[in-house]
Image (cartoon, rainbow, N blue to C red; front, side, top):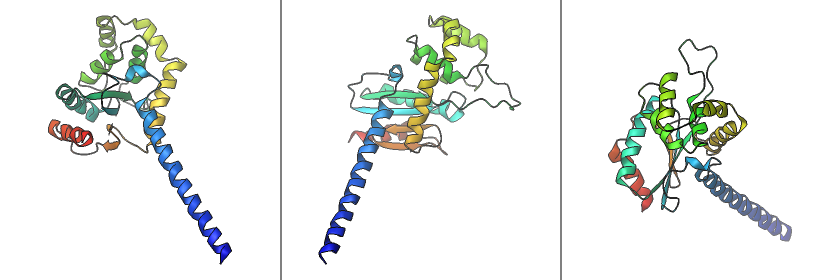
Length: 210
């Protein structure tokens, strides 16, 4: 009986340690998501009480539609720290449709290395199509005083790839498999069907602020 008691105590201790580790690990994952290696992705005051992380892609129609909703919500609620994190899905070499010579996500991160992440991110999101003409990209770079040639060169470098890998790793680390997806506070929202309205999104924010 004594040995059974010790065995039971040992098992309960292991279970407690397992759950404690799980809680600590989950907290660490959320910390990483809210503190990307490319910290220029963090928009607005870091002291704001609520953080929204936005996993997105510039060829995603739903993402572009939600960008408008999120932008309006941020205008109405100034108490939010917003972090858009572009997710790179490699171009398909067998695709029959026209594709950019350089993935847009690489260009936005490269622009961020020149201090122009938000400008390029918003410009690409506001363009209605998933394919953006090279001439328009050049014009956008010129408008925001971005060194276009440097941006193109940097977009193919290891640093940009490291930042994009960090975005993907953090998304998959929370078992998020699709975009657009949002982390509002500590809750995950995956948009699949029926895009949230502005009212819906503001409600999601308000629920996390309580």
